[in-house]
Structures are given as C-alpha cells and as structure tokens.
Length: 290
View: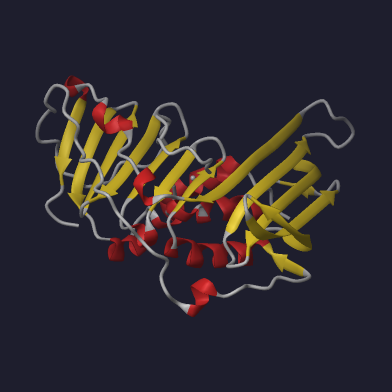
C-alpha cells in the first residue's frame, strides 16, 4: 500500500499531471494562490502594466443548466466495496456537467460553471511558486508568482480545448483525490443527508505496521461522501506514520479535507489578484496562439 500524501499529489500536478483544489460556500475567491510551472517557450514579456489596471474583466451575468444526459441525471448505486480510484474516475466525468465550487485541502479553490465555460482557480503550494487562473469571455488569464518574479500570461480560451490542458485535473480535484484516496478500497457504510442532499457514506480504516516509503504506517481513517450521481462531495482523510515502529516519537500526520458544493452562476467572480498587481514587478505575455 502506498502512502497517500497531499504533498505528493501537488508534486504530480506541477510536474505535468494536470491539476488545480477543496471548497466552502464562500463566493469570493481568496487571495491564496497555487503553485504551477510557468509555461515553457513563452515569448519575453512585452510590457509593464498600467498603474491600477485590472487585467481581466468582470464576468457577465450567466445562467446555466445541467447537461441533459441520462448519465448526468441517473442515480448511481454503490454497494459493498469499491476502489477509491473508481470513485475518482466517476467524479471527474460527472462534475463538469454542473456549476460547482470546490476546495481541496487548505490551498486550492475552484469556482466553475458548467463545462468550465467560466472558471476561477486559486491554489497555494510552496512559498515561492503560486498561480491563479481565470477564464472568462473566451480569454484565459494566468498569473504566475515565483522567486523569479511575477508574470501575467493572457491568451484565447475555449472550454473544448480544456481536456488537453494542464488545468482539467485540477478544476475537478481529480489529481488531489487520486493522490489521497485513489489507492484504498472503500466500504459503503450507509447513507445520510448532507447539506440538503442524499449521499452514500464510504469508509476505510487501516491499523497496521506495514513498511511504506521508509516509514511504518500506523493508522488511516478516511470517510468519503458520494452523491447519487457519483460526485464526491466530501472527504475527511487522516493518516499517521512513524519512522520507527517501536516508538511514537517521530510521527508524520496527514489530516485533510475536500468539499464540493453547488454554485450560483452569479458567484463566479474575478479573482482579486488580477487587480492587485504591482505594475513595476509584473511582466505581461500575450499569447498569439493556443
């Protein structure tokens, strides 16, 4: 059994495995950002920003409805035991058909309209590498902060091209979920009402001294809520390791949560980071093709 660690999931994202992350019902994007690699082979920034310039427009009022497909509406029955990776795969396929907001861990937040026609993404990782992304009105705005400085990349955007981009796994939380729950089998333990919706409750509990990644795994306690469509609505995941199975003095703990809630289309707002730039410290890259 491999150790599921949030940091590992993040490293997979920034190495090219597509990623963005967990939410509450807040309607305003926080100023916390997420690390991601600055695109390679980009042209040299062309100009500085004007003083007080907001470099992305406000989203227009939008009304969306779920995609009318049988797969999106039907009840997905879950019984017995199911692998975490299967839960993640179903979640990744169904979630984009709806307006939603998502929080993964403490550093990733997503607000997305159906099929990612408009989205805002903020994620924070290492102190010297963060990114905020915002797609609206057929344009994609990416703000990269690193020890090398701040770069704003602007280019065309259409949601049909998102599948092959680095963001698709991040917008649904697929990369985060796969790294945290994908390796474990979950057992259905019941159903409940959570935030006004019916959900399946799944759980995995492990107490062992198996040697994993140079550590002895002591404990895993993980609970997952899955709605009737197959969308993962909530994860509460706890792991505890120790370097020496004979003592508990040197332990490593992973304690994290994931949440997906419904979104009012009017609550997708422009991230404040795009209006809080220091013109003297920002390089601007305008992409001529996508």
